[in-house]
Length: 147
Image (cartoon, rainbow, N blue to C red; front, side, top):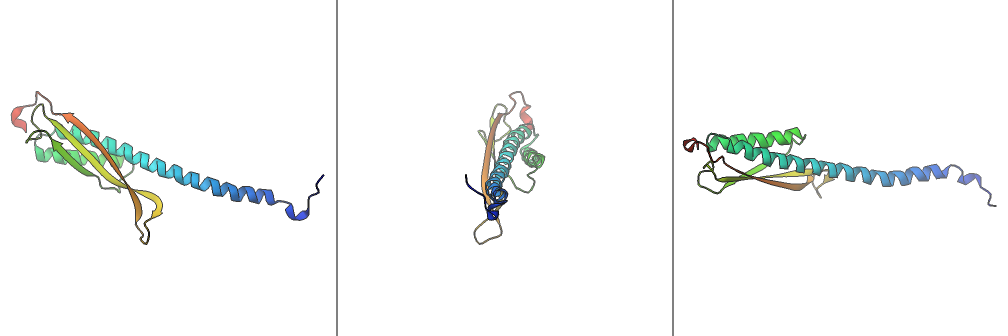
């Protein structure tokens, strides 16, 4: 049977703490990063969906653009991603976007900063692009003069 020396006493707890921290901290960081990107993707999906809905219910192209922008920004605010500025690209299959029976597509793109990862030689954080798209038809029975 092996005899224990006094110098080995209590080292198992220190080893456990060091190894535990070395394993648990990266796992926590990965979880935070995945949850941040997941929330941004959900916000982007909702922004595209609600933006196109707001657009097709607008009374004119300028008010529809404004409504889509407000709806997209509100979706990001709802998910707690108020710092990112979403870019909205609207495409239509007719010259007038609000032509009855026409389709409207909205693509929402944003860049989400990864937590605690600065760019090399800069204080800015590394960002990941997030993009979502939604398409909706303009109501076929919409008043023709309302566009």
